[in-house]
Length: 499
Image 1 (tube, rainbow, N blue to C red):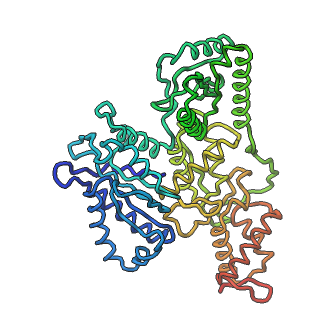
Image 2: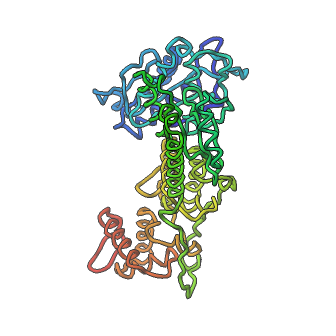
């Protein structure tokens, strides 16, 4: 899910009732999709008929000017390209969906709480249909953010749903962990909370947002910014209804899907044997705590290898510029790495890639955790970094090729001297195949003719490595084989020569 905040565009509320610049940007995005991802089906949905027509008009001009891309619009008979407005989208699934909100901030800076069909009864259902049409990627184009939508000015459930959706699109998470300050829902909840507080736990009541309030939430004592466990205090009368049970099951799936652990306490069981049920709650809290702390523990510890260095390879010797390592803003260390939003993490990753492209995923992760002041990459951190990379890639901020992250603009890698890097970073596997191949071409060209075995040592020194390990040998030989197969160099007898 990719969020494009088009703050420089305006909604012409008084006349055309369109956002012309947004329509231009969406049409251009369609053409880029046709050029870069022709095998992925695409659909465009606008919130209004006027905005749909504006996109259609701009796109027709662009298509006439670029006939070489016309095959994309005629191909894929099973899932043809379409542009529709909100009311007309039903069962149309596509690999990628572009959403143009159209409505939004006017040139005077005013944001009306009028969003066409969303204002009507059932508007939230139309939005639900729309945002579930994409199979792989959904991109949202709008000149407003969730913060611009004032739900105090409208009773529409559709607009409230839009606010939640835009928040999730921008920040990568649902806004469900707010301590509302609301009172306990029932004396039963208060009773359970009181017993847990007596045992030393920090308990918050009514945590979440509308439709997703948790009765009780246990605060992590080691990290007050997160919760260990959500507790639902259920009364038998309410939960006897089948529809309520189904709704609760769906609710729990959503909450567990965004990381909550849920434990239910039934009022009938509590009143029969409160001590036994309290023990079960405590056991659930301690299990959740243990699971959290295990996730925080290392699966892979970043170590600094102690290597005996007898000499230094200088940039003058290698004739390559020094490898520049990215430095990140101190804000990254302000809280646990996995507690930053996906958008924040993606921004820092983009900076690393901008400076170090192409950079190995593991090296990017090393920069992140070291900047955050930690020495361990656990499963949770790795998972968040993977999500952040996907987020940045979906927004066109970087390109991932196997284990390497590239800036979209870079087509050819720059050869870099790594002699000044920490020893843990001086590994041949952290050099992209493209950079390794370019180094071999450079070496063969400058040597006129060189044996493969000699090339291994020469490439190693070119990058600033003092030792030739077995891994280095195998990687360089493989790169030589690929360069020969690609016709970049040739093997003539026992020596490598320029093609």
